[in-house]
Length: 134
Image (cartoon, rainbow, N blue to C red; front, side, top):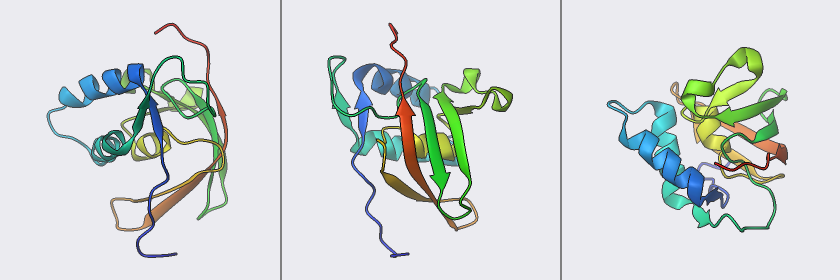
């Protein structure tokens, strides 16, 4: 794997950007996942509610992805921390995996460093967004 892998371009909806920024401002001691989410929001293209391009991972999106190191495939919903329940296959956007998935579209690959120095790599296989009035 190359030592410097450029992250893929990502999109974040205006509503998600506002919610996530408020969430991050309220943290007393950011975790590794929160630090990654801050980096992702800083580089994201913010899109309006009328955006009609390719679906991308947003809050409440169901995303199917493959861990390219293990070959394991999973299907999870990316949610706010208070809604995360592993038994419901939902993951917090403040977890490293949740933060890494936000904004990605089908086919994109994201690499990030985990706490022990290893690199985690996910490939998005599918994204489903619910129509919401948040």
